Length: 352
Image (cartoon, rainbow, N blue to C red):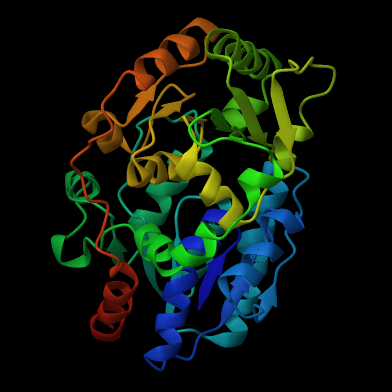
């Protein structure tokens, strides 16, 4: 059984799903519908060729307590009904807290994207990561860095398998599709002449002053460099704008599908984001990235030089973008070899 609920989970699990079917697993797919927006869910199922899930838990998103309570209660009902041998989850979203139900029922748990740590407990995701990792039977970190985090927390080495990053599998598998995207022409964008922005994390958008500072920083970036700022806005962020004035320099658009967004990432001048996955994708495409957060669970990107942690002050955002644009994007680091999905399924076949 796999349980998942957000755009990054759908994307990174897409080829794992295909590999499970190829290797003969009986696979029950459970979608929590955590994002509840068609532009963040249905379009990805269609583009990536993922079949309709067996269950849609239709989470209520009115409050943190209700969502987490729903995930635990509803996933428990499905686990009792289906009695899976293995529960597979990816990442650190609230959907991953379904492992609490699985652990209570004695179900083995496999966690892809294990071991990431920002050591910043302001982030809901940081608390989720620790819970999921410590309840898991098999852990799949992307990097040796993440593996060392797990070992420092006394997780047994024989439960840990470094697999590389599945985003490499997905990008390489669908390269022809996203290269054919006409999003640049539709938006009248020139390659390397626009900034691509994503910002949706609760610690950023739930605080009005923080969100205002992000917009001020983006305005400063536009004033200095003159390039357009393209911002596919997450519904979560849109719901928090309220009376905030959005600078005219920022072009707000609806969330994009995987192929259009990936095409924009590849040809951006710089990525400005609070996403973890965009940090990795910037490194893959050799596009500099500025992270508008106070910490990251992907410190490899900072050490390599592809990513700068800007914090949230407008002046620091501008200074970080300025510094990022002066870097040489010849970063010598491999995220993966395109076989992460195969490794996951081969381990699952043997480990249980």
